[in-house]
Amino acid sequence: MDESGNSASGWTRRAVLPALTLAAAALNSNHGMSQTIPRGLKLPPLPTSWNRVERIPLWPGALPGTGFRASPVPPDFPDILVRNVARPELRVFPPPAGTPSNGLSLLVLPGGAYSWVSILNEGIEIAGRFGTMGYTTFVLVYRLPGEGWSPRADVSLADARRAVQVIRRQAPLRHLRTDGILVAGFSAGGHLAASLATRYKQKIYPAIDALDDTDARPAVVGAIYPVISLSPDIGHHDSTSNLVGPNPDAEAIARHSPALQVSTETPPMFLAHAVDDAAVNPANTLAMMQALMTAKRPVEAHFFEKGGHAFGAGRAGQPNRAWPDLFHAWAQTHLA
Image (cartoon, rainbow, N blue to C red; front, side, top):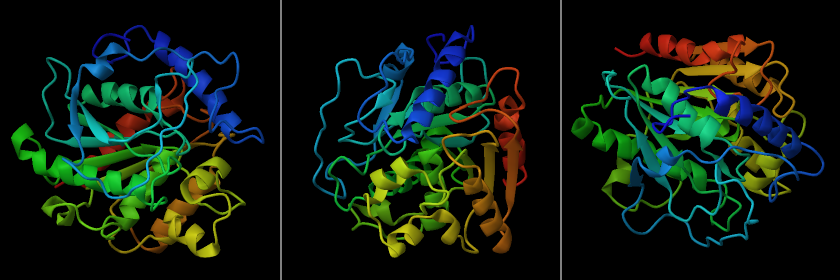
């Protein structure tokens, strides 16, 4: 990967995708991975570009919610998996030099089972791929519900909602369209994206400032191999447990299962999943597609035969590599 964060030789993708797929599979196992990485699992280092790009704090002072508690992190814990998020922020990746802006913003919500934020394959690499199309990409480092925050279950959604408002406020200064904010979320970040699509109007916390009362609706939303249902039959155990606790009641499961929250105001959604995903059941994406169709909301869905989990911007030599281009082409049909 070069200094801009774009894949140069392809070595990073070959290294990180199989490793994070293994990590995701372990997350869905009986042993779990909420606190540790399996011994011997090698992940690539954080590209230097991450700490060189612009950073935007979501709130200038006080945050909604209280109770943050930092957790001990093993000394060898990979720095591409961010934990202990006390101050959520956006990292800004403009189009690379020589690529004209298309005037559109992409808010990226990485995954990590609500246990960490996977900023390389579902953050930096996504920014690199969409940057070549002219997007200004904003990667969100959001707060994690299991790190002491109260109220717990909506803290990540509060950050995603605020991120849309911050991007919209800054759009004119960056020569970006205020009506051209796209969202793409992955795995648990896909759950967060779908939650944003279905609950962007909800007042989930007392307003901190006037910005909190502004429009938080994205133009379109992409959910890539997303967790959608919190039900035990098809849900992802660790994502559910980290989000709402180990023993959620039926009301909490319904409230935080986006397919059950679709309305006539849900923005158009793009869905993608690999059929051989062993970590997050593709039935999650089917459930979201069906809910959108029932509500007569625009939806496009792609199911790839292969790809597993955590394929990020797509695996070289596989059809899932095409999803960013498909998402871009589809989005244009919903942008005036």
